[in-house]
Length: 362
Ligand SMILES: Nc1ncnc2c1ncn2[C@@H]1O[C@H](COP(=O)(O)OP(=O)(O)OP(=O)(O)O)[C@@H](O)[C@H]1O
Ligand SMILES: [Mg+2]
Image (cartoon, rainbow, N blue to C red):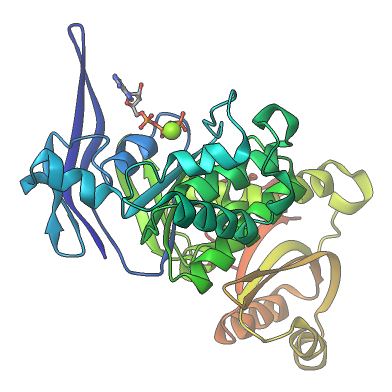
């Protein structure tokens, strides 16, 4: 377990004081894949670097499995650090050495014999799917392969924790998924705790069971990924999610399309969102049979977060105003959230993309 308590990180640059991290407390349980999301400069790297004390906090404590890193001697700290591996965006491999040697280098101070080390390196390269690249040099590998080498190297001393600082940011989407799949496998098979910094909610969606959102050195929202995705509270979190799920782009397309965006007087453009197995079909047929409100689906999407579906639909609802109200009340009673994007009366867009309307109205 990782316990960060009241962490401040202040950098002194010439006469300027930079508060990179402000009073952050965070608990990461064993086997969590914990995402830390935020825009550039939010303080993500600074915060994660205190976990292995590469960055000493200005204030606050870092306790890993009951050990307070701030209380350790340099030697004790080196020993604790071995339990924490780290990978980076740009891999940080030694270009003049083979893949085998890059991984072997991490075992230099492990106390293992040459034979044991060779066995361990072979095992690690097998684990990351690179057994055939032992003799190659980093320049001969693709980005995804380089990151696999970095992962093998980070795992050399059997760490309990792996810190990933933008580990997939330099990779294309397909390679990103492959690396995330590898991290998931390591999490499940080796019981590895993973802390993963990213600026993409897409990455969080793929593998994180928990997520914290950082802004200006603070954690503004944190929790289980499923509850953050299905019920984000902060504007920034909503922004990140909307970008990841492509709802924003779709809305823009719809709103700029003359025939789609044009509504009759008894029509509403609405976004529905719901969590769980429930499907929209019976609800939609009920809107018609009970309230004579028709639903024209313009866009539908289901995201699977931690095995739970989160659905979102963009629809045109058509019916008498009082019936539409009843229909929306009914949807709310079924835990479907609704967000009116555009109504005909008055003719204005009341929900701007990414805006503040939280959709409890009808
Ligand atoms: N060694 C340093 N000396 C001075 N200022 C620093 C140092 N490291 C980080 N900072 C500053 O601290 C703030 C937080 O930086 P940090 O690198 O933690 O952000 P980040 O969220 O990781 O950003 P990015 O997504 O760009 O990597 C920034 O304003 C940065 O300029
Ligand atoms: Mg960073």
